[in-house]
Length: 190
Image (cartoon, rainbow, N blue to C red):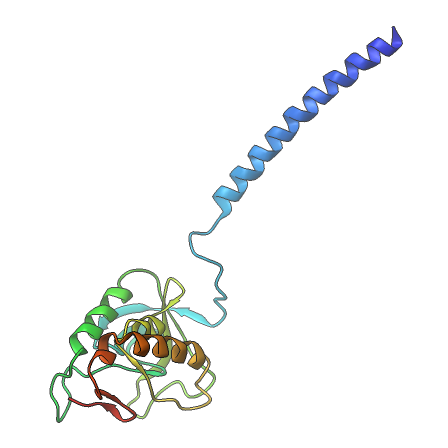
């Protein structure tokens, strides 16, 4: 009878063990589900949350930073001008400004400074701009609405991915790259 009694006890214990395993798996799954961030894993070291005041054009915005409104010029890119001194409104200027505004209003706005100067000669902040951790500069370049430009070391942290995106847009012939000889080393030719 001892053997039979032991077998019954072991069977009873195995039943509880299986039930406990199932409960543990459910609890672990619920914990993982509720602890997941909606945003992907992004190294946010150096990211500074800011508030958008308004979009000026494709590569310049006004933000509220450090308690005051300041203009910010995007590092490493250039977009066509809405009001160029000699050429007036350049092709794709409205599209780049509109797309920039759409991106900026689609999520959480953050900026990142590079290791060089934080302002240009006009007193504008110089930074990388992100929406929900995604680079606005890179997106504009990928979509053919900006070119890689104004490369002043040491502010070159994201130069390689921007150049890769530019090459793909140029090969696809989209946006600014759809007009022959429009993009030059000095800017945009009408």
